[in-house]
Structures are given as structure tokens and as C-alpha cells.
Image 1 (cartoon, helix red, strand yellow):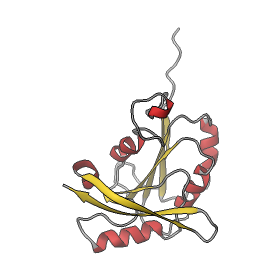
Image 2 (spheres, rainbow, N blue to C red):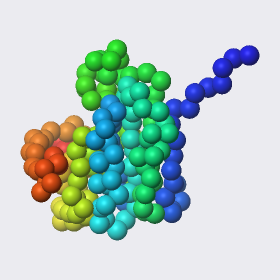
Image 3 (cartoon, rainbow, N blue to C red):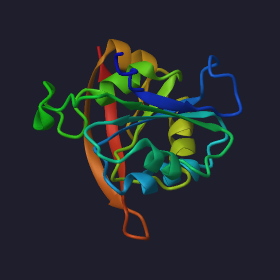
Image 4 (cartoon, rainbow, N blue to C red):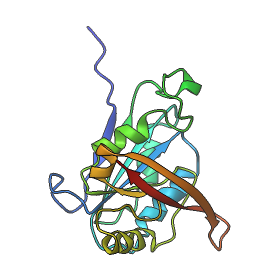
Length: 187
């Protein structure tokens, strides 16, 4: 008898209907760094009032799903989490064909999986201040049709435009790295 198929991920629902788009999606590819727990908690601490869809793509991590589930405990009601764990790495550094060393094609794949009009990107070794998403949202509303500062772009821009930008790194008071980027989609 053949072996049963291995699952390639799981979904933890928020309080809303999953078919109704969330206000923002957070895209996090991971290679299994222990700092992922801090990154996830920083999303949970957001003062953003809307629904947040967090998509985590696991590339070449030995951590079992049980460890990921433990890490995702304490999720607020407005946050759903979808974890994608392919049975192979898409990163060239682990034998895949894509050059991105921190998750291969996962950032792109997760971006297209998002069910939200706005996407924000959080690396697995970074964390956000509590006002990060609400500030990006305010900036986005102030500049309709354009990307905002902080790795935030519209789903339409992600699907139809090339991205150019420069990254600036800052530090939180506790010394944890946080990111802010300037991005502009181009046609």
C-alpha cells in the first residue's frame, strides 16, 4: 500500500470568513531561524484594527510542524496564519533553482497566495514595532495608487509591476532589528 500523502501546510483561521479578503497580508519566508517566533509575535502585537492574513513559507527547516504550532500560540482573533511547507527547497543554496537565499521562490508564491489588497513583507529574523501596519496603512491611504514606505505594496502592483526600492534598517529600543524600505512600483 502506498504511503499517505504528506501535508504541505496548514491554516489557522481568524474570526472572519476566509473568502472575504483581509485588509493586509504579511508575507514571511523562513529558513527556520529561531527568531521567527519574535517576528510572529511582533505581528500579533500590531495595533492595526483590520484583519491580517499572515502567510509563512518554510524553506529547508528541520523544525517539526508541532514546533511551528507552538510558536503560533496566542494569535489574536483578527489574525489568520497559513503555513506552506514544501517537501523540497526552491532556493539554490539548498538545491533548488531560485537564487533568493532566504526562501527561494516562497516570497513570490506567498504574495500570489495572499487574499488581501495590501501586502507587507517581514523577514523571519526581523520584528515590527506595534504601529508598523497601521502606519503603512495610513501612508497608503494618503498616497492612493502608490506603494507606501515599509515593504508594502498593493496586490495589483505585485501582480502587474516590477519592484524597485532601497532598504533602510533601524533598531528598536530593545536592540532588535526592524526594517523600513522605500518602494515604488514601476510599469
